[in-house]
Image (cartoon, rainbow, N blue to C red; front, side, top):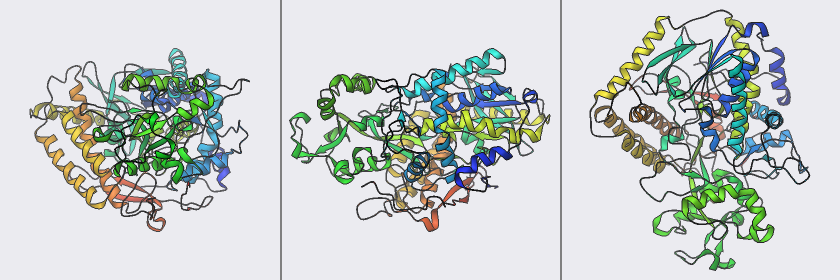
Length: 638
């Protein structure tokens, strides 16, 4: 497997400009002769598709929602990072790079992270030009707030609806290009295979979710912008239909899968209180700017929180990490919430696990009106779900699966090891290492879509000028037949288990053994359990209805196969990475005070897995990480 990163030589701050100066280009008059497929129309996909179409390429977009506006990017709440230094508090491009590398526990490529920091300021200018209504100070300047793992205020936000507003901006750009004729939208379609011919990505096979029809589309390049894979855990903050099928099917066609065990637990989510729940609700990390995390010092203290005096409250983050307090990174905040609940201090008692997130001091200090202006829609959402008002009583929150740092392996140009197949946004592994800092997801999606891919894809397309393949090629029929055969097998099993029941069981295994804390024994237990679930999936699955029209159970059944295979690989990757780093916390490797203990000598690398076929173990490859500008140090937020 070719894992050449393609990072240019030279100083870190000049690598991106060096790349652009030497990249091959496609002339404006020739771009209309190239076809590009973009799968996924969230922030990364919509940004890439609209930018490529604006350049003159012929673009086709595909999404399983009824509109690009329904993409899960809409659920992002807190904000987007950029090193604008509007607060004049010492922020710089280098400091954003430093915070992101340190936050990822030194398990990301320096060149990719520095480029992200460089491009961050362009993103804000682009969004403002589109009319994104960022919050502003009284004098008209764009407002900023802080997120975890940093000591500056660099997060731009639209109250608690930042993802929604940014997505509407990108959607407007899509609609503009739709009207020019350079872009086609195909909603209610799901990618089921990537067509690879002579080693190059040449198109996709989709299922029409309305008619059930299987169709193929050819292109000169395929871009996957389909998000991450934490829905493998069943309970997560992702939308129920968010899935890993596109990237997993690409993996099975030869694309390397990087760092699958690297998944993020978000510390502030509404805890699960009933078995029938299918997803969890995120409460933005921005709330930790003014909210204070605490539990009663006395176990089983069931007094109303307002009646518990200060001396009886354990502000565990503030006491353990005085420099950062409640704004430690997500992995640190999540583990500490787990520790206090493990020790019996949960504020839900026997009903579950939770800690308080308390705004009473902020309301006293700044007034209810100010706090409402900052977080009003988040408070309303919490009230609607729990019937408790955060103005009167602390939120009860607990960590939940939220984001995947792993994904398809890509080089510096965002192309996978399959020529012509690109992965952008959360679908790739490139920027966040072992832990993502808050407000960096939107930054990466828009940097990839607006500013990186449109400037790198020409380097590949230049060399395949007029080397066209259409859907009459025999490979397309072969791929379509394989997809139809797979669907027929699902429909014919006629067992007793629903996809939902198997998926729920998979999620319980993954959360218990490959969640916030992991051990070698637990990971082996999870792998054995997943193998049993795979047997049930093959021999006892029930998919009612037909494949000739809408059938959501069939959709879930197809995705479940990918969850099971990916879940098994995640556990194996976590077992092979015999260290702790970021969100990957192996209990065998921790310091005396419960912090992660890295092994840079053996694991300063990216693990990249190669699919070898059904019922065959995957092969592990490694890309060694060269860390020169910022040598790894022990990560401390105390």
